[in-house]
Amino acid sequence: MARRYLLWFAQEHLDFRHAEMHSIISMLNIPIKFIENPSINLPYWIVELPSEFCAKQIASRSVLLKNCLELWSRAKSEAKLHENLKCSVKNKSGKWIIPNHNIEISESDICPSELLDAKFSYLPLEGAVNLNKPDVTLSYIEFYGVDPNNVPQQPCDLFFGKWIADGQRDLIKFHTLKKREFIGNTSMDAQLSLIMANQAQVAPGDVVLDPFVGSGSLLVSAAHFGGYIWGADIDFMMLHARTRPTRVGQKVRNKEESIRGNMRQYGIMSQYLDVLVSDFSRPLWRQDLKFDALITDPPYGVREPTEKIGIEKDNYTLSEQHLDNHIPSKVEYGLPHIYSDLLNFAAQHLNIGRRLVCWYPLVRDEYLEEQLPSHPCMQLVGNSEQVLSRMTARRLLTYQKISDDIPNMPHDPHGAAHNFRDKYFAVGEISRREKKERRAEEIAKTAFYLKAKQEECNKK
Ligand SMILES: C[S@@+](CC[C@H](N)C(=O)[O-])C[C@H]1O[C@@H](n2cnc3c(N)ncnc32)[C@H](O)[C@@H]1O
Image (cartoon, rainbow, N blue to C red; front, side, top):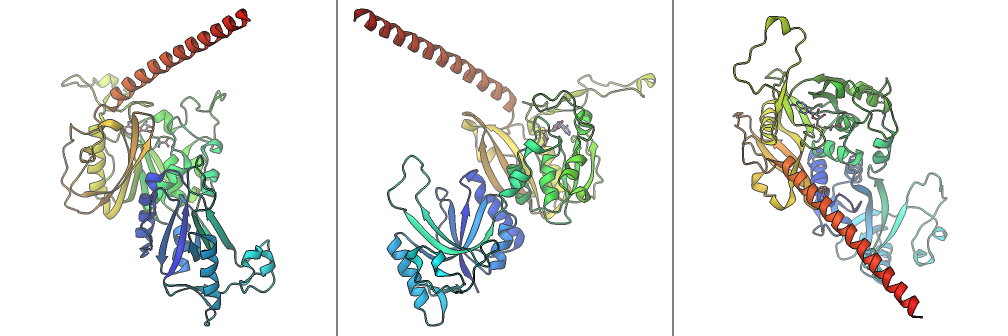
């Protein structure tokens, strides 16, 4: 029977909350009914779910969810909260009821009333208590809004209910880059990697590919949720962990550093398939091979070059004598080309209903949703912004494959990410100049103040 639940979220990465939750709910095929329209300014949702098991399943995946309560009473004032609870207690059936809604909430759960605040002493709670391993945890929440500079005298919302489960916030600490053996300059932080794996709906047994794998940070999360992982990258040195160490003070990389080593560190070695040196513009995968999910963070041309194998010269041929030791040259791999290759690849190599999740950099002022990369076989189902600086951001795009009618789309030269690199550095110049000017102004102001003070002292 459907019950009412309070889902309490971390008040960060707000733009990702819906995308993550909807991905999880649709992956688990759980019907959810909103009792109140969710507001992005509030850290909670009040929903109806078919069972406690469903609530636990959602909590077992979400990184943005802090915890979940079965909601027994909710009110705008303390008096009303108690009134609601007392009505429930009086109910003859001995069940907890939300007044007015007539929805059964829970059996009366056992816990001695003396442990509760005197205000709750009317609750019919009996029996022994085991504080180390409680059978039931009851929660009373007073909500004072989200503005720390404007805290009201009285709470604006009060909740009481039974704790059901915590979300997966602990994983953020467990997977933190600070303690990871192998990281690179562009490793994705643990929280966003986990969100990506959720949005890609990675389930146990799925085969997942990151075609711009770098240090493999996205694969750690995919493997954590049971995916079997493949990675590819054009950079031989990166894949063999022979690039300059990223950590301050580290002179040489440890021998154990590698993507495989990271999997070993987290006890998920069994999920590792392999990583390959490969240029994404020339895919090496069999045409009929299918992946269950693609998750990736392509190069933006800022901290790593956007490049592919090629040569500017026309009709270039390699002489026999150079064949053995030849190291191919590289040319620019523009962002519009990268994203159209990515969508074409996804249309070819995903099964219907499966997902591509990728980051997309842009200049915020110039963002237009209609200019995002598109493909007739791939429907955009998630689009969340992470602000990087005053002017720039990146968007986490989630595409779901909806059709098998695989046309190979040409690249779109007007894509918004077109010359992100040039704009990024232009913006950087401005802000550096601004910073210099501001510092000069501050120095001048301090000098003026000190001079005025000195003059005042002299007069005395
Ligand atoms: C933003 S980084 C990915 C970072 C990665 N998510 C991690 O955890 O370290 C982009 C990666 O794409 C790789 N790359 C650039 N051009 C490529 C190409 N043509 N084919 C495959 N990989 C490429 C770079 O070597 C770089 O490692």
